[in-house]
Amino acid sequence: MKTQLRKGTLEMCVLAVLAQQDSYVYEIVSKLAQSMAISEGTVYPLMRRLQGDDWVSTYMVESPSGPARKYYRLSASGHAALAAMQQEWDSFVAEINHVLGSHQAARHRGETA
Image 1: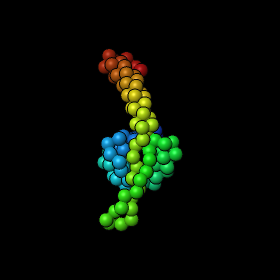
Image 2: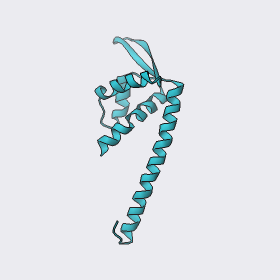
Image 3: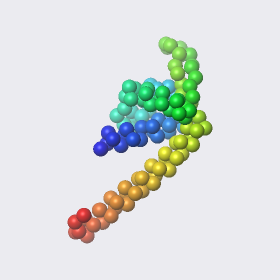
Image 4: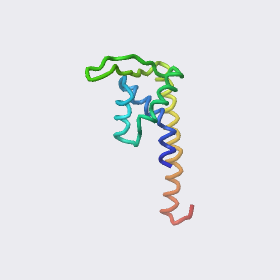
C-alpha cells in the first residue's frame, strides 16, 4: 500500500520541493530520500512529464566539479497545480482520518466494524 501511495503522491512531493527552491534531479532525490524511498530513475521520467505539462522550466548552471547541471524551476502553472494537489490531499487525508477515527471509536466501544 505504501508503494502505491508513494507513486500517487510523488508528483506533488517533487513540486513541493521545487516550490522551496530551484533544484537539479540529484538534489530533489536527496531531499525526498530523507523521508521516503526514492531513486533518480523514478524522478527523471517525471521531470520530463512535468516539463511537458509546463509545470516546470529548466536552465543550465555550470558546475565547478563536473558538467553543467540542469536545474528545474516551478512555473506559475506548476504552483497552481501544487496548490490544487495539496487541497485534494488535505481533503483525502481528512476523509481517511474520519473513517479511521470512526473505526477506532467503534473498537473502543466493543463494536465490530
